[in-house]
Structures are given as structure tokens and as C-alpha cells.
Image (cartoon, rainbow, N blue to C red; front, side):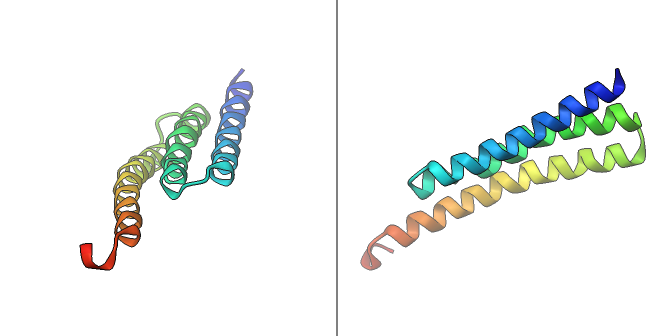
Length: 97
């Protein structure tokens, strides 16, 4: 049973990453593409964390991965905001800056 849960969680992780890659390739504007990066972090991070907690239980490694996921979510939001602002500033007229 444990192996099935881990395999399913990792399969969901892979599908989420591929979905983000396909979305990034298909979306036209940079603003739309900007949504794919935090999606992959959130949608792939949670099932990966589930797989680690099922495999290891409440171990040091599982809590390190939890911390890394939280940092990636917070950092990803900040980086997406900064990237969107940089795109907007790049598209502005030079006299409007």
C-alpha cells in the first residue's frame, strides 16, 4: 500500500511538471507564461512532500523538504512579482520610466 501511494504521488508530480512545461510552451504572452512557474512549484511540491512523508515518516529529511518547499513557494511568489514588474518596465516607453 505504501509503495502505491508513493508511486501515485510521484506520478502526480511528474504530470504537474509536464503540464507546467506544456503551458509555458503554449502560452503566448510573458505575463501568461509567468503563471506556469509558481504552478509547477505548488502543484509538484505538495505530492512530492506527501511521497517523502509516506516513505520516511516524520524524519529530518522530510522536514528539510518541507522547509525547502515553503521557501520555494515564498521565493517563487517574490520572483514572479519581480519578473512581472521587470517585464512591465521593459514594455514601457523610455520617457515614462
